[in-house]
Length: 304
Image (cartoon, rainbow, N blue to C red; front, side):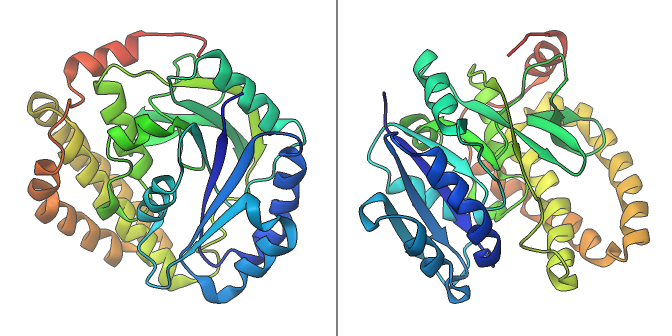
């Protein structure tokens, strides 16, 4: 059985982790599973929670009070993994006792491909990432006929070498959309993601809940990052086709942000995305997601 490292990025997560981490420990019992925690808000006591649940030889704790973002936190943690596979797991996810054993078994079946693990949140069940004509990328409903475009960053398995070979997550995105950026790049390169018949309970949004400033920051990042993901990962022919759809979609999204009181950060995000798009595109020189990729993805229906 190959080694598996659970990689978790923390931000204001102590209370949530105190609830979820014991379920991870029980699920890892008797398995070659270790843990790496990249803590972007170390002053809230996560280190104490971790030390109270895990033996010190079973985890690595990487604090960074500068808060470089989810994408950078994942990359830094994966860089500390020696080999094997990583399970990117949000701190607000609970693990059934057999979850990690089932994930290890799925890895053994086909060690070379990414795996999308399901999440139950907001009254629905989702597995990986799907395309959407309005928001560009969305959580893929578990019952969708098509396989996932790629894994969601909240519960994703990657061969460590593969994640590094593709440069990991694009750190400038900071958070929200970095998994879609990688998913488009993987798919364009011919790599397909398997889905698991495993759905994990997920609280969702604990790091921004109840904080209007952070909700505004998320609205900014989502608007900016949609533009940057398209700029980085789409071929020029697909960009010509997609730009009118993106414009119409952002008009609709603007109406939603007005109702939420988040129009200003949303518009700032769009403007930043347009300004930063050319530079972001130059930072990825590999295969890009084009019209052939799009048609193939829309046409193929497979079990996973």
